[in-house]
Amino acid sequence: WYFELSPRGTDIATEIRAGTTAFLASSNNLVVNAHIMQHAGIDADRSVVSAAYASALTCILSGMFSNLPLGCFPSVGPNVFLAFSLVAQEVVDTSEALAISGACGIMLFLLSVTPVL
Image 1 (cartoon, rainbow, N blue to C red):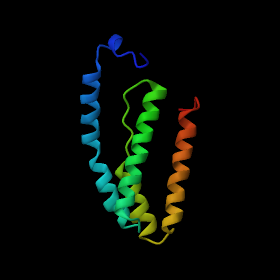
Image 2 (image 1 turned 90 degrees about the vertical axis):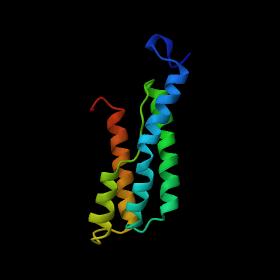
Image 3 (image 1 turned 180 degrees about the horizontal axis):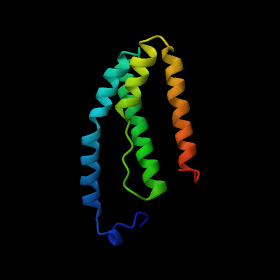
């Protein structure tokens, strides 16, 4: 079995409970982030759905590649900065703020797959 549950002293039922608990503990970020991003002019429904898809994809990929139970969810801090410090103050528009966010994500990914981190 790929995840080697037995040697780690766990089973599928325990992992499902743990994953459900992690999801329920972190899912409030989806709604909070959607509310914050509304202030940047982004539709709340699209924000929730896109964050949920991105979270699911990153959780699955991180679990498959690291063989560890990692939860990857969007945090509130960067979105507050983007919405209230950049977009609301008219430093950048919404598309530029999303480009900044995407560039930061790419840089973090590149750092994580290299020995730099």
